[in-house]
Image 1 (cartoon, rainbow, N blue to C red):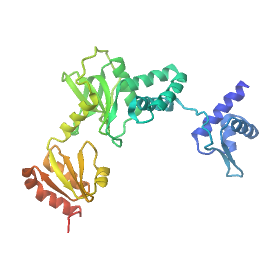
Image 2: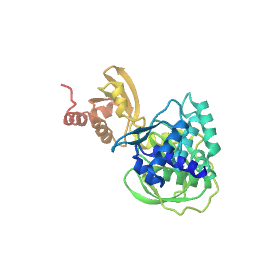
Image 3: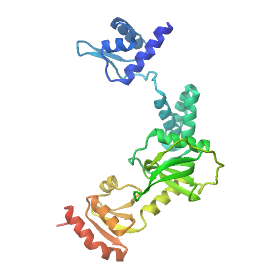
Image 4: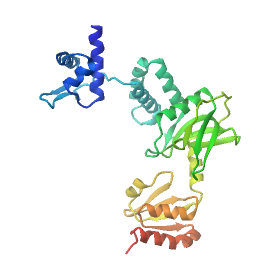
Length: 323
């Protein structure tokens, strides 16, 4: 029986990992005969798993959806990912499912091995809930986990970093928290060489282990780190403030403009106002034109007069000038 039970779990894991298996492939993976595979499939069906079988040379076995949810098998990375998401939801990250998330999290953490529980605790304890949407640059889970461990263990981190101007260099920091805001991951840390707090985009850094030594924690630069990082990103990216009329419906503009770029306000069903800025007026206008909308700079007056000819040329080049 122990061998049969272990084989059933292995069979279930294979069926969950692949859309369809032939009987011969399953028999080869499990080291048994095709007849044993058929018997094991019948046992899974008795346990409530809807395993579909199609006959013929091109047929095989496929795990389908049933009337009730059967137990799932998760590998280490999947279990950590599910636990992290559940902790976020339980903490109010997703409105309306906090209580359900707590119950599901309790069931999962009861069976998590200690090594995985430590990974989940490190990730959730040293990250700050998101402010803003999704859709920014992707960051490897291994990098986030490595930085979260360094935050938890209070170990100095060295990494290669590329700033917003494309300059590359090596940094040594005392990491404090990871923050997800404005569709990007940021590391809030004390820069050892500059002797001040700094915010680093995680997608622009490459850790260079080994890390250490340990350090004594410092008082963080702000109580609300999500707001602190968001303010810093906005100040750095949009030093020039402007009000721009976009000749596009609010929904269409919102689909192309990130919250970090500015705020949108509907004027009528065909246009909206964007309150935004950029490192320089020319950069701002070029970015707006690249969105494919016809636009007019409304404020400030000096910027409107200065940039109107450039905006007109860009609009004509993009084929969005009004008739």
